Amino acid sequence: MKHTKVKDLLNGTKTLHEVKAKGWVRTFRNNQFIALNDGSTINNIQCVVDFENTPDETLKRITTGAAVSVTGTLVESQGAGQTVEIQVTKLEILGDSDPEKYPMQPKKHSLEFLRENAHLRIRTNAFGAIMRVRSTLSFAVHQYFQEKGFFYVNTPIITGSDAEGAGEMFRVTALPFDGTPRTEDGQVNFKEDFFGKETNLTVSGQLEGETYAMALGQIYTFGPTFRAENSNTSRHLAEFWMIEPEVAFNNLADNMDLAEDFIKYVIKYTVDKCGDDLKFLEQRLLDEEKSKPQAERSEMSLLEKLSFVMDNNFKRVSYTEAIDILKSSKPNKNKKFNYIIDEWGADLQSEHERYLVEKHFKCPVILFDYPAKIKAFYMRLNEDGKTVRAMDILFPGIGEIVGGSQREERLDVLLQKIADLGIDEKELWWYLDTRRFGTAIHSGFGLGFERLVLFVTGMSNIRDVIPFPRTPQNAEF
Image 1 (cartoon, rainbow, N blue to C red):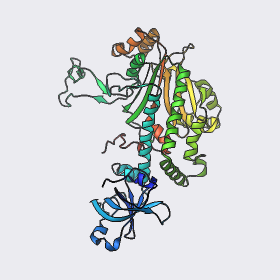
Image 2 (cartoon, rainbow, N blue to C red; image 1 turned 90 degrees about the vertical axis):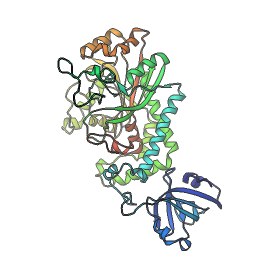
Image 3 (tube, one colour; image 1 turned 135 degrees about the vertical axis):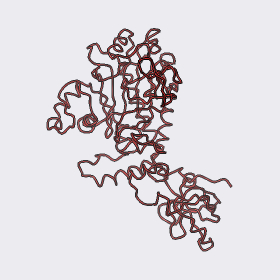
Image 4 (spheres, rainbow, N blue to C red; image 1 turned 30 degrees about the vertical axis):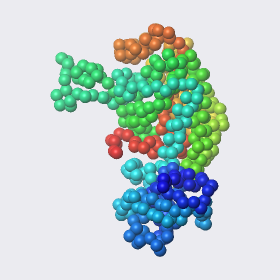
């Protein structure tokens, strides 16, 4: 007999028939009641064991974490909290779990402890819910773009270019550490390396994505990216996933429209599909916030926050206007910000972004027209010569969730910007060709997928929304 998923058993309408279920024991009470979970849903199914006719040796092996197979009759449940249960007629232990050694006991564990056991934390309710939400969001990303006629492009993970110009990249080499070949002036001779040049793990698929948009019209990438940024914070990872659409003939306003529509779509899709998981995560957040001072608690519950983003138009504000608001804000005047805003041109920090969203506008905000000096070389220079057609989307609790721009389509302006930044033109010859042959206005953005998962799940640390986080001094598992 084939086993049925717990989710399907709980959602079914037919009872009084024989079923088989397989999963892991969450709890075993009174030598009689197994709470069984197979990962298909946050909800367990109760399996009632006839303990008088079950050998003691078998009962002792029904421990938290053990894998079991149960066969029996699906009946209406007499107990509270579940509609159906299984009256077990046959029980098989598939894999034992030593209760003295199994770390995921049925009690509250700290998130730090769970990170140290990232290979087993998925067996907890919270992480099961987070990862099901992550999976659903991931599917929604593809569905949105495919429905809109975008083409999915896989850009290289090993690259010779630094799209962001930040230089915080992981080098990829096959050269030996002992006896590294050198040039006459003592530099590492990358001509003898595997690719014959210096290569790194990608920080973004954008530049390659642009070349495809200039032929296919509208494309998106969704893949891993890497930053060797020594940031040990709750918002940074060294390896994370990026969603990067790129659209020919779109200007900055079109780009903002696309980003807002996309975010609302994937959140709505996930709210519709992951009701039980999100209700659980909402309750988890409420319980967590009870220990915080009133002033630090969220004004909205998790589901209210998600509805808030879906139901409200994002406020569009120029960088210049935002600086004026921040300069005259109470926290700035009272020196409560860690980074005081005193002049135009400042690079906004998370505290400023969150102030604009959570305190001033009280809705998601799209900032645009940033100073050219604090933005990447590929962003289109405005007529004022000092700002670029950049945009960032700011979210409550997160700060920046999307960064994008209209790209610089004019070859002469792009060449000048590259020269000013000391970037080697020869390294980007292929990118510049898109401006030499059939250039046109085009725009795109990047969304850090984990920040989106962070927002939708209500978690506060980005290490808790990716299966195996990679951070400074940590590449465990």
